[in-house]
Length: 107
Image (cartoon, rainbow, N blue to C red; front, top):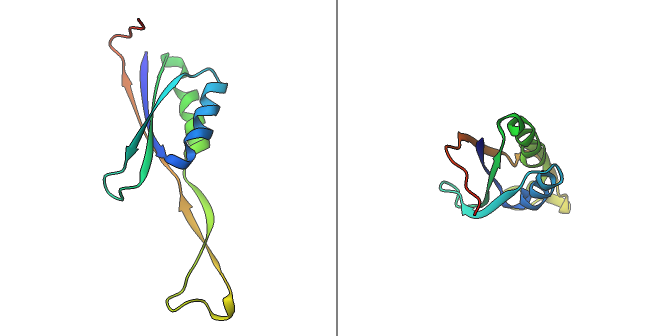
């Protein structure tokens, strides 16, 4: 048995958990804060059998992995003529830890 610890952006949490549940994975979510940028994160704990680890990881990467979004760019001093240009920005991403579970007890 393995324990997957997934640290994702808070805004990706509901979608990721719903997808995991739909595929039969039970998880526990913890509200956490990043140490460097002090952003709200979500840490998800998933216990699963060894053969299911890759499936869970693929779901997490699909729902909470890095992606490119267009973000508004505000030039110094404002934007001329009210034009609001966008720039492609990499957002999201997840940090995953997979560890062995020595003992599992559900009481």
